[in-house]
Length: 153
Image (tube, rainbow, N blue to C red; front, side):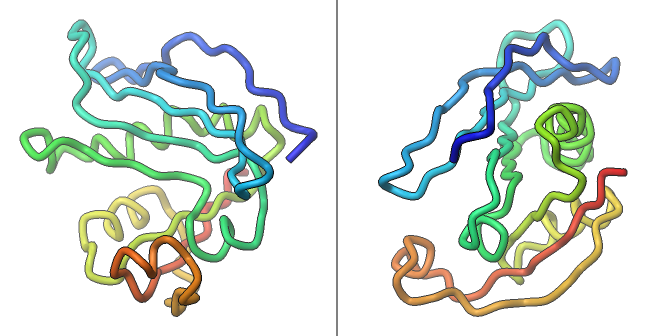
């Protein structure tokens, strides 16, 4: 997991929302967890979070195949405004700063809003894969993941 330095970032904004670093997680090599930026998504001028977006900084097989580099969630009352896609675009610079040219985003096949977010970002749908039985996701009841590739350059 070495080779990645978690930097400080000021909030990123598009004029309506902003993403603010909430936590810089250093990772846990023994547990196979890579370093990660965790951002709060907020409406500009409002300190309350309307969701989260995270960027996992690594390239393990598990991450690329099943977990993805980016995760996001928008609170129910704020869905339908493309905030997840907008937040992903706002943290794109962080990924570029970390040396990424391509990111992988995964989601459950029946998660149509997440799949639509990937389409809005311009990601390419690659495949649907079966989760290995020894993964936490499988143990929690998930069985398959859609894999999307997001080319940043």
